[in-house]
Length: 289
Length: 240
Image 1 (cartoon, rainbow over the protein chains, first blue to last red):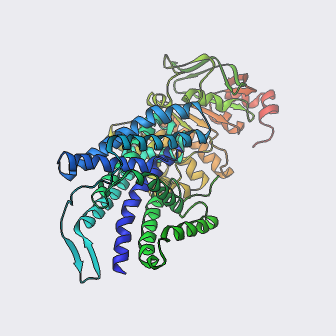
Image 2: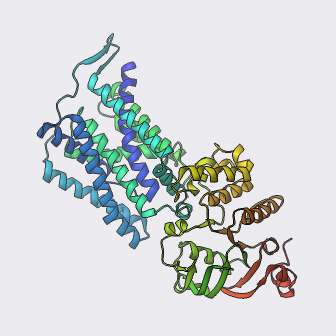
């Protein structure tokens, strides 16, 4: 039991971090970033290159991934989304663009890093063992703690910094934020960069545990969407709740349902459908429309 | 008197429908000017044109001797124009404190911001009581006080008010009117007031313009307009 909860919390922290990036971009720009999973994979490969190929310490790989993805996010917002939003009022346009970027990034990843599963050497050795009730490798604990620390930093940044306040204002009332002097273009770019950076950070964290491969992008995007559907799109607390709930469901499912075969996600999808039929706006979201 | 703001033959349209047809107005430093007229007469369009939320099609807007039209909304705030938008537009999930701090977004001197914050809280003691509450939990009147306070946090030279009495309990409309008079007196701020409650608007302003279908149809001293028969018939009939 302790083991299942610990696994769920560890997974949930990573998931919450992914969902936070996605929900930030959605709330600021009303853009569903279908390329979020690919950004995560890209971040993992950057860390792999820096740590495994160049032999640098993990922290350098983590920072390199964060910086690369932030820059990528800023450029994507500036030259792709901003242009499309300016020319088209239809939401499908940005959805198509996001889907296109997802395929494009898949191709870039294949070209740059190949199709093989990649990983980095363990960053810490040893296993925590609490009387065989809870067994957890130290590197998982470290990565889990780092993820939680990043979530806390993100919340503090959004809550207390001027830029964070501006982004919350922009998400809650775009026109009023403009009237306060918030430069919409500038903060859309910052928000997109920050969201992409979060995806890159999770990629860097998880490459140390599970490794990374080209095929992980799409499924990760789908999971991220599920999390913000559970929690309520565009709400920070909702993304965190959704991340931990999905992490916990996966952890419980993988141990409880394992005797029935690989049906965890089948059960999760089915329960999500029932849940959304009852509460389409998610746990913390406001009703649509 | 120094001229603060002037519209010269401004035209503005939404999707090919005229909102303003050659509007010229002036506002001097220290003045409170009211814009009255029916729904859809173009009053709010004038404010949106000033704040840069809407681009004008022709004519010019001059503010303190410089062209204002064509500049981005953020820069216009920085130049000292703050707006209280129609329908209040609070940031619903933010605390009163954060809402007020957003008003000072373009300012950088923290000590100075703290002084303004203190003066806003002194002016609206209700906001101090609700300081850490979410804005969505405030009553309509409290929200209106808050967004006026939010605009003052920018330390504006020109304050634009769009329908501050809309959706407010009649009892509180007088409080709002008194607050506007006090603000223009204490803060040495010029006020451009858009109101459907013409009687209130005329009783607290120095001058007024009446608009109808995007054009100025009447202008004059507010005191005189209050007793003008045409104004009485057209604008003061229903509301008390």
